[in-house]
Image (cartoon, rainbow, N blue to C red; front, side):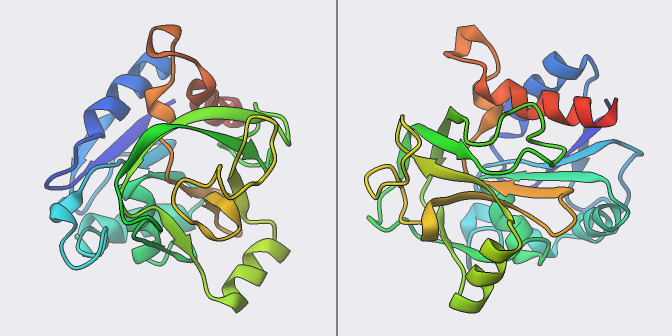
Length: 229
């Protein structure tokens, strides 16, 4: 599998993602600078976490208007798999590739810990190696991860089954205590209608081998490889 990682000023998770993708796929990802207007032919485009442009204006707002994003949109329309993680999720919503928006955490504090997620979709390129309803553990690290959508948009998201992951407790229950940021309906990740674009606040690239504490995140990337097989 060939991949590319889009890098913005102040991105700080691009290297983590690069290491994870290289270990899992055996191929070093292309690192694409935000002012580039072309992306090599790849199977996966990843928009990493961090604090692009220092989170000025709104998290992801400036990055969403970088020159490279026109090409990301074009590739997404062509069916290429696109993932946005943490700040990358914020960028994809700001760019209009995914519905909703990410606001300040409900407690107005930065949250950095492992959380449990319930897998809601297994028919996407990113989730096909999980089982529906499976509870996985993935780290989060964000200040603006509170997923919001207005009532009509939220109804459409739920009616069309666009939720990929929800925050839950160890048993899979969707409790308020298990929600680290106040996201509506405990939403941790969503996909577009076609299913080839996903955004999620948790960081699967940080849990890809036992030395890191687990492999639940590795399965996310292995699913993309599986979808291409």
